[in-house]
Length: 579
Image 1 (cartoon, rainbow, N blue to C red):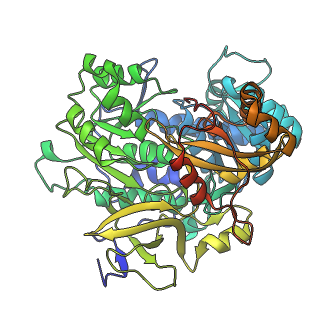
Image 2: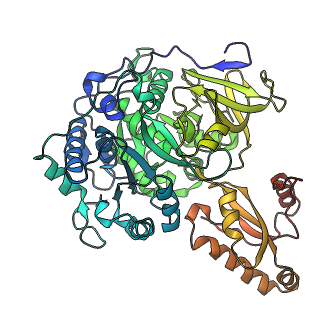
Image 3: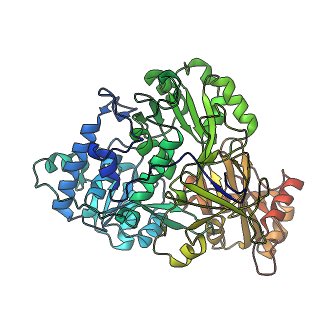
């Protein structure tokens, strides 16, 4: 803490290297930072949860090298080439990423649940030259590729020989095998400072204005946030007896968080491997399988979002499994209530438990619960990481003091370059080195408390839903005159999208007196969304008919008044669905 208006995290950060790419830093032993512990010789980096396959660090290096050879040979991947990965978690997700980086390319991570039209939107923002695809996603990818003119010979299947789906596509395993005998690719050495400007990832985010954007994350951003997190957690420091340290080489972390999401990509994959842990990689989350994996692999570290915390507290299957190996649990991507925190401690009584806070625009993390707290301050998003600066700006533009409320601005090595190919949005959000987060917060005793998202995004199981996206689609329905979407609280998902709908006048009159017609209209509107949007964007919070959408003089939807309507009559207007 400094003068109560400009806040900074500690302890002192040893500067991250600014002349390395992500794989040069993470895979090449010669580039070790002072915060990086030595990996135990018999400790795998990854374990495939389904098959039990173990992957050691040297195998990750070799598969990355061979794949890069094949990519260079067949498609001449080079500096600035964009590659997209559309797949559930996969044992070769990392090598796909790092092979592209080795060749100077950029990796765009997209969710496997995206519809073809959503993929078209992303392809138009950042047209890929090659796509790594799991067979489960192939149909949507082929449809989207046809729309944007991307040739099918640019698709590589990632789920092994004999996978389902049409023949005729190259297979990742075959490319790795072929690459072992191909000419060695040439990897360029970066100049001092170059890692700060070279894009490593394009990560989808709704940003702070609610429209779909792509965040440009540099190699330095990823390296910096990992070193910031390692410094914060005193990795590779003898600050306590080995048995009492929070992160120890040889520890084992769960790996169900999707790797296309910044939380899974950076904190789970890159940070855990850097810290000497093993990641048990799970393609698809199933709660009982998750419990069985904790018991089978003696998992020590849990990286959760609130829905999993809810299940741990309330699911009857929990009592059937031995969870005593768990020593650390962080919950992020959405706020965790104080009540749920207390319930979780009853299930995991010996755990170090707390929350983290961050955004895609901060490479996933701004703060997390510190080593000085075995249990993070209830309701807090943690404390600022080293090398992170923050200020809280009040509506009048002055800086807030503790515990005054205002909008959070942050600065640090983890703050992204901006929004890809969107200069206007970048200027509005990345201001003079500061990220304007759109979150209303206050600080108290070093802890950050997030009390409201100014940007109005809805978070469903940690995934962002932009109301404006759903509203734009709903207005294409012939029965709808006007609409607004808000998030409604849900214990399991955190929030669910709910739509307020103004019907065409004649339909509105008829629906008032005809319950059957009203339910038919709600079902049709619900289907209008489910036909083209990902599951987490469905109107699972309900569809409610209203006479008018409240707006201010400039036309902005007054969502607080809609929430007030909901509080006044919570049962009116349709049955909420469970995602």
